[in-house]
Amino acid sequence: MKTIGILTSGGDAPGMNAAVRAVTRSALAKGLKVKAILNGYAGLMSDQVEDMSLQSVDNIISLGGTILGTARSPEMESDEGQEKAVEVIKKHGIEGLVVIGGDGSFLGAYALHKRGIKTIGIPGTIDNDMGFTELTIGFPTATETVVDSIRRLRDTSGSHGRVNVVEVMGRHCGDIALYAGIAGGAESIIVPEVDFSIDAICDKIIKTRARGKKHHIIVVAEGVDNIPEIVNEIKEKTQNDTKHTVLGHIQRGGSPIYKDVVMASEMGVKAVDLLLEGQSSQAIGYKGGKIFNMPITEAVKTKEEFNKELYELSDVLSY
Ligand code: F6P
Image 1 (cartoon, helix red, strand yellow):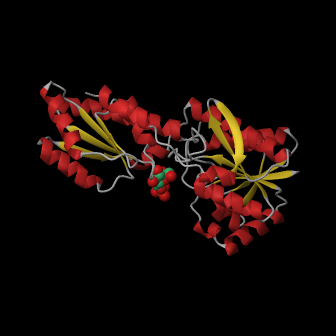
Image 2 (spheres, protein in one colour; image 1 turned 90 degrees about the vertical axis):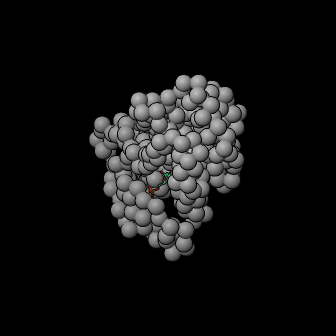
């Protein structure tokens, strides 16, 4: 193998740049040429390809977002899109491709593998919704950002004696809500994975208010149905001023924390090593402090397990 390509795809996540840097620097050190594909699979299909040098990745280690640009590209699911992608890959002499992204991006990598291109997937999404790996790049930083926001809301919540409902990202996965909720000391955490009772949530607010608690933080994951209705119900049942804050894309930006940078760096190096070994259609994951790889087909089939024990703990701790 002489030339590899790298792209970021799907929603951006803090730490993606650290992975781009690691892939580029380790590949160049091992005598490979590196080509960046800009703007995800969409950029691949429209031939947006640039040479990478040691200097291309100078000073990006702590930058949020992705310097390569990213996109969600449904065209990559079609035969036509995949054929176009393979054509561009071959035109640039790219023999192996590192894809940094979520499940959809991994499926794109698998499609290219079936068409004869060696591919490796690095999990990059703030959602932490990929069951095969304990952590995805971006999740630790996004969670830290949410904890910071909860702390700010807790100040004003306590000053005014309000209930503050914080809506966080995660698509169908409640991990950001769970971990940020625990770290932020939320009174209740509402996630799509666990049934909940508004009455129990309101009862807790009323009881803890009666014992003198002034702040009330409810963290809700965006995948839960009818969030504005939940907010209204809390307001009516507790007769408390209740505010709804949607954190939105703020969670996707910012400098990655050390965990994301270290993990992304290790994963980037591993991706290059796997390509040099001749491997393909491999997903890189993180478990028990170690980096590992497994076939993409198995990785995308692994169901995400929600940490119910931790979830139950959160209720006891916040009375
Ligand atoms: O997958 C990452 C994520 O931030 C989800 O948490 C969220 O539902 C979605 O992307 C938002 O997508 P977009 O950036 O297209 O608005």
